[in-house]
Length: 217
Image (cartoon, rainbow, N blue to C red):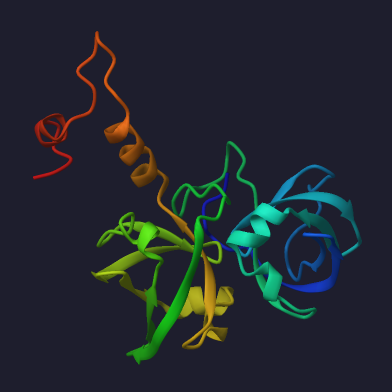
């Protein structure tokens, strides 16, 4: 589990194709590796990867064919910059939102505009994912926890403040680029609950119950 608060920008040092899978070696930049051991999880551009080998300033991890199919890893080259975050601990501050590191798909950058000291990004999500994106809701883009500031159909707007720009790979994005997208977990589970048949002894989750509980109006 992660928070979406990026700890370092790393770079891909090596990429090894293994059939449909990929083995990556990542140079970690300023990421503190003092407490990292084999088997630990590190979010790499939002993807939860398991450390299978450690170097003095790097780690190696395997990316399965399933993950490759949902992310941008198949297009990355040696030297590609990636956002890094170690898994949370019981004492970690939850400064972003709960991020699983399980990517739902990719979104495409449509427009990039300066707005004062900040930068606005318009992105377009796949139709099957856009229903989970809500105004003022949380979303993870390449592992970065962000707030959705506007939604128009399948498109949504993000406003990135200078601090976030300075600590992540977001300033490298331009129109036409694709990013790894993880929607908010609450939206996914709520949809599943709405679809599941109610148990005979329980009322189940209904629109009436949600309204009564204050979740919708």
